[in-house]
Length: 302
Image 1 (cartoon, rainbow, N blue to C red):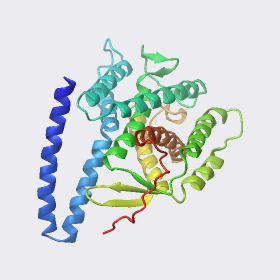
Image 2: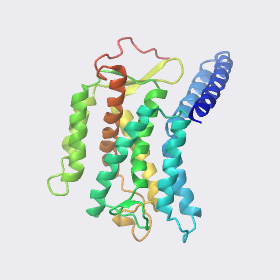
Image 3: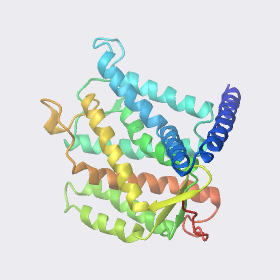
Image 4: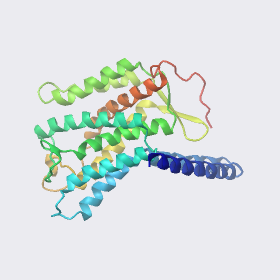
């Protein structure tokens, strides 16, 4: 079955490649604006493919909030756990997700769930609905929400053929990720080191550029800007999740309100943890540190 799924995916991608070449030929005959428009559409399609797991999870949250029977024998949260597992299996069986990506996603699932157990015990947020598949006050579907972040980064890394200029050594980024994770726990008892971590993040990645290929040409942008943009979209997704009553902050217990913009900083730091975990997979695949062989050629710009 997995082989059939991968074959169907390969055939679909080949048809898409043929269509893309035809559209590219059409755009080239109509000038620069048409070429840029075609590339923008391709960028959107690749982003949608990278967001597939996260987008499906958000759709599940909204769909079950709107239509799931309130007195069903299977609790809504437990249904979300089973649906997320099925979604993960389908992505692997169809070849839309590689085994290496699945492993890092599972690792981030564990990391996220451990933090959730602690945070809910401290009263940072709650899960208001009953469920059986849970650890303490944390239903198990929440780990898949964290895994969605890792899934996006891993898939985007592959789809956009990420390369880097002046990337810091992996060991330095790993220590930063560990410090960020520890601070999520210790700031309840010790001074919050968040601003020190922001400074370390800027110092490590302030001169790093990410090169990403939409079609034939690698474009580039500051990696820090990419981090902020991803964190912004995660914050927007969190607003959708709290609106769908998947979880609630203390200020939302008596009615939904937008998640404070200050949470954007927390998501930025958490997203860095996911990025470092995905980069570890990329490092093993290339058998060299991420920053050991920066792109030497000047990226083509149009």
